[in-house]
Image 1 (cartoon, rainbow, N blue to C red):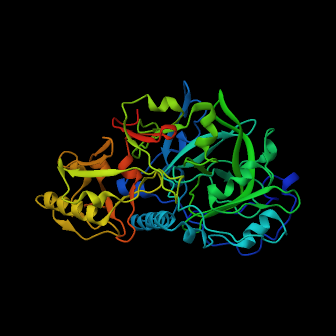
Image 2: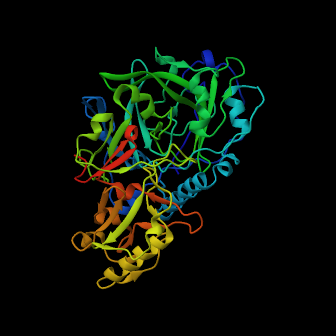
Length: 501
């Protein structure tokens, strides 16, 4: 576990101003749900990520201006945690966390009302942030567990201060930890955001339209401070992680010449859980409060990214990108598939998977086996497939690989493992291809297909989904080094190979 310390109003910020006048008892018990971020890729690739010197580069090196949009460097989250972590998660721990996210996504889509009925926080936590006024509505669980595998650096305030923020396509609401941290802030690599140091910071009232949009974005009813009427948000997650704080507004800086003057975000006063050493989270789902929607009037309702494989050096070329704006759709030869809508979860990105081939041969399953809700998600690691499809893929994969490699015992959810090393498979690995409606495809290579959780053992990086109300998820492991375009305005998603250059 990371050595995580709490910052009180006296310890951080010196004085309490304006909104932060209500007092509360910090000695009360808070939910014990703080976790360190998974060092999954460190364990998978058995490499130390020397990135300390790269973390301080942002304004010039991490941001590239493009006409009708912006492009930021995208990093793997492992580096932020590897600086000080003394007790990294095991590979099996990472898979358990991945399962929690998948179960929660499944429950959201299968029965949204059930998801909203259980709380991931306590009313006491909210009381401390908003003041002594009694809770008027029950707290309800919100968005799923964030494995937080990738981050960007963005600027906030005037003058701009830069922060490392998780990027998640499964979340709508953006927030970061703020002074004076009235309850709890986990350890982060950047200094805490200090609202009093920004000339343009302000809080939003409960009568603001942004406050009215909170329930759709977080699945929680907003609340109000007892003295100032400031809107209080609650964002909770599938593993009981959460952030509670004040709905705020300030200047968001992506590049020095490109800013958003009225960016709505959460100024977190109690932030606990599985967020690693990042400052907070950026939501990119299809929702009114997401960062994408707030930039859409200026750059168009579109974004793209390329998720890099972990780099072995701070100046490695394996840095990915996050591009905001319509220009992100024209930089590569994308093949598009329609973006589908699900009435239970309109903010998530659904698509239609029609076929999977292995070594250029279709899996022997009925076409109806693919007709399940299928989402693409930057926060899920391992791709989940409907059980009939996964079973067919597993059997065909075993038939090919067992001719050269002996089978090994299953490792957690991955039950298709062999004795051997990843290095030996670079030229012998059969291609797995995902084909989507409309002709878009993902031709997966070895680095998208197998992992090496233990020295001398590699596994197929897929798992089966529940046979009851099955769900398919295209995880971030399978997306690595592909350019993925989200043309939300025209309801389509595109893929292009070629790496993150």
